[in-house]
Image (cartoon, rainbow, N blue to C red; front, side, top):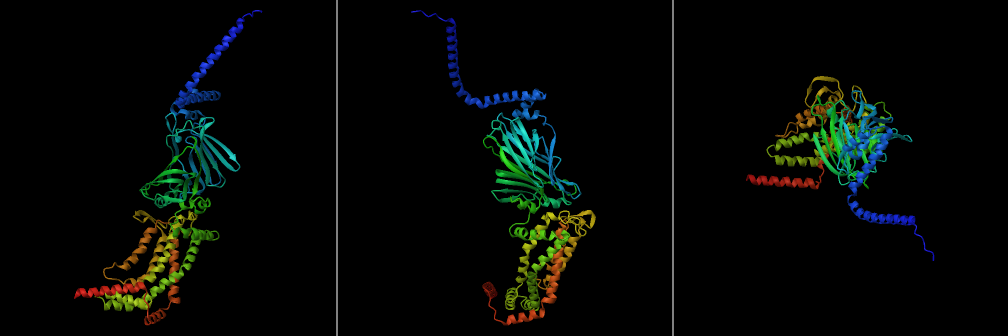
Length: 622
């Protein structure tokens, strides 16, 4: 048998292969052991590796653009992963503008938020374009923590803009970048003819950058600019309103400083009387805290801002990322526009609560819109609407005047009772009630019709100051029916009155005085009870108080009250001289007195109580 020769090269090859296999086995076992340890520290070491990779990739990108990698290193010392955004060409004070035919928005690279919001079709009282945002009066910031221990604010970081077109819609993407494919994005979509724009906040690839164990807060602030002639009047209707728990809404009110907190927030509105800034979200914020502060202490010196608004809303991560679909509204506080969005935004317009709001929503707003659609001016529309309202309420006016006429006829008999029992108040009251019962008259029957008119009067009191259609619409000497009219400027300021004279409130006060004289002036002093305040003085005082109160109110409201009282006076003159005959009323009362009168339970009970009281009084004197 031939002996095989030993192949030295083969032996060396096997030895090398064996050595490699042994090394691989040893290395695999070492890696398996190290894997368990690395899982415990992979968040820290992995972040360092990813940071190194991001730096290497960024350096390559920067080398291609000629930028300095040293700047990146310095930026990442300050901002961590977000240092990348500070080295891009967009890291400057540049801005991007998008607009349609009603709204123009300017969005800054720094912060990615709107630095100017201009309403194209409106001017302020002094003919300056209406800006809701300008000259840093507003801020929008997301405060968050990173996994490397930093706390950052988006308002201090630079976003990269990209404008595109989606059909007729303008799309602006603002990206706060960690790398080319990892970023936080604000996305604005502006549609033609709309004050409402789509807005979304989303992140991509930041699940290992954002610290999910720390709160992420959205903070929105705004100082409302003055847009109207009277800053104090405008401030009175400026408020923060929010919707919570599905369809509930609330407001902070007009105090010097107001705060509140609520859960499940679906929109926040910074309402500036006739213009509003609103943030809406498809997925409600878990909670929200709100604050307003009055910035008008002295109308002579505080002439720029009305109120300071602030809202703080938490954001939640989903799978380590942010993803919110929202909307911005920058536009008029117009009931029709807001109501058409069908998102409960009509509640921002203060039309009154309960029945008062229903009357405005379902009667006065549609009816006034109908009148103003064909009448030549809004002032005439107010007058026509007032005429219709007074005609509709004329039966109530008739009932009220009829009651007063009955009381006038009974006055001689009431005076006789007062004189006969002047020393016995209990008996006097008892006999007076018997007379009312027999005659079929009651002093309360004149009050009830008046009370029925209160919902209408209050609804209109809320309607006119909130009617956006009246803004800067003139009539006769008033150049703006949504503000006060001026026929004379005063060289001084009268407390509670102002530094001007308005004519419509004067006319309304005169009409009210005439009306009160016709309805109550003849009976007040005759029925004056000892120890009671002088009712005639109150009758004179009421128009005077209205004169002061309405001097700074919307002239459209004063026009309504003047016209309303003028028409009421005319209706009452017709009722008095044409419809109602005092002699017939007297004859009817006398006939009623002869008929057996069945007392109702309340009257009978009152009669019994008074008789018992009188009996006890007699016993006490014995």
